[in-house]
Image (tube, rainbow, N blue to C red; front, side, top):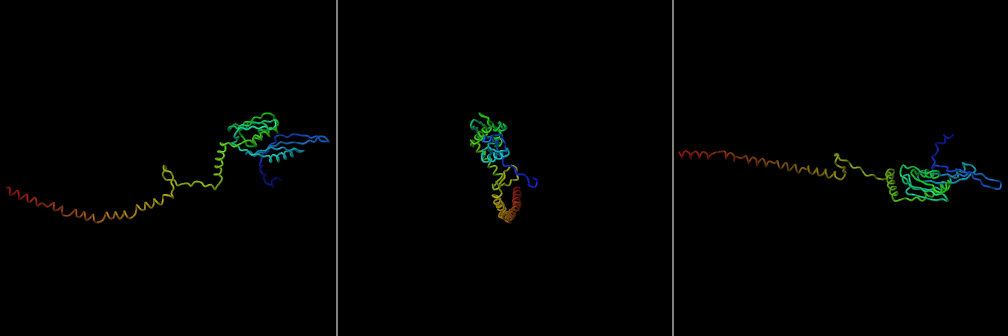
Length: 256
């Protein structure tokens, strides 16, 4: 019969029955018997609440207690599965002391106090129940103690960093820094391409302009060839002619 209805929706809060009592009321015709249920609910993420309900049947009492617990919900700020500071509260004759604990300690608590802290989402804690052991009064004292929790400066800094990291991951509107093109050399850091590329190309183009080619062409102009031709003029031939030797020969003949 359930298949055509689809799967059940998951419950928003987890429920735990702390105590069920039989209570009576004396009336004119005798005693009237009823049931009283004490229920605690929570989402294990910082929300927790307790409620009391009475009815002729147990199921009706539990339903009334859950409805009242939803009206009495409180929200606490957790600090990495524990609390930020030591707390203590008293309700009638019940007195509860709760201390923060390091990771791996576990939930050191018992009875109704343990149920409330588990549904609140606390995993590492140290507790001590002083005074009365009445479950209703103990749960009320635990709730009153959790109401006194405050956010410390160190805890606020951690929460800000966590929120920023979550926003970067989940929010697509957050702009991420653009990646720069890495250079081919391993030792050099990445440089931006858009800023320096056109300047370098123009400089290279200017360095390879036809001005230098004209200068080279001018350096290889026929002026140098003419200078070389002049340097190879018949001056050398004149130096090779030896009219001086003939004169020296005539002088030798005269001396003889």
